[in-house]
Length: 304
Image (tube, rainbow, N blue to C red):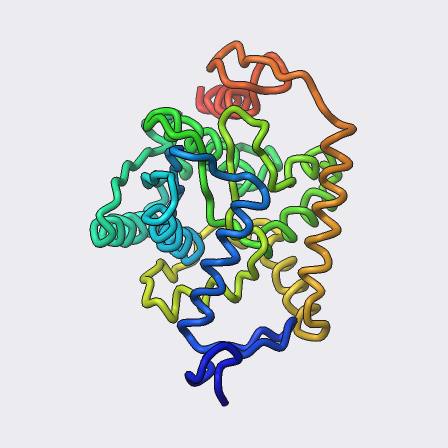
């Protein structure tokens, strides 16, 4: 069968739209959709420096590939930041992939580690949890967000771009609802143009399966080894549940995503809190001490 947009052989079928595309047309559609999302949510302004957060996984490397192409034709610049959590036998492989990929693209890369920033690697932090019921993903996510903020400020970037896709958004929404943490739903609006340091997700309207195929058809190398702590939480179960729904009801993920954006804006508008400055690190937060400083302090107290 031939591509719906040209005469080439089809390579991918979008079940939710019925569109059949060859490899080249599919790749171009992902590039255009990413550019449209960036424009729609005012993610990048003229002459800004974008810190592309790259972990070594398929999403972040695909994002880097696309952002590098866009930077060549648009008025913004990119640099890559990578966060080393300190997971033995896992992060080393990813760092090697990222370094080689950045070298091939001739893009600047700078690596920041938990150990240097917080005096604790992730494994050390997990050992200090004690009997507290806090997941590895919760600890890692909190520290990673602060590490990315530090990295962006260190390289004087205006924007942090991450490879989170539509599936990630759906999973995070369900996790927040199941945990009762509805306030975080207000943070899920893709439009962060009002923030001083903007965190953007250019892939937020693209299915994870499409990112996988983009990486595959463009010969993008990525780490296939999963994080050793990934099954500690419920994200994997939620991913499988949503995939099973999408398989039976094509397009249901798109519908849920649109609902999440509407709910997020309602919560965001009704849950505005005055921003304060953390007494310990000087970062913006909603209390006297930020969540990162509270977590690191608690872990170090367990150490002593």
